[in-house]
Length: 114
Image 1 (spheres, rainbow, N blue to C red):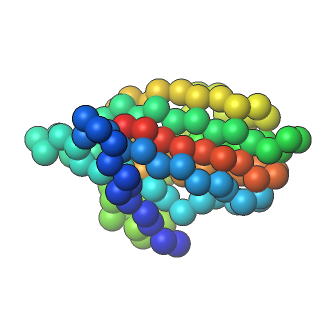
Image 2: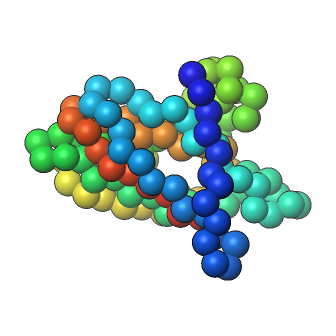
């Protein structure tokens, strides 16, 4: 499993990432950047997912360490909405290390801004 980091910087020091998840699996984990040097990994994340017609998907996040994410031993937590069949968004607060999208059926667009 490969991991990715957010590199798209927006004005004001914000980061943005979007991609399309393919049907029937989880995307590679997206590691969140350390925005606050004194508190790396602790930042609110605004996330969205939009499944293709008839599909379903969910966002998952982890509080595990970066090393655990890279070793594929991280514990993944489903976002508050669970599996959705229509566009949904949420703000996830806490020491989030990484995010991923799980497309249960059909493709799904997803993204995050921090």
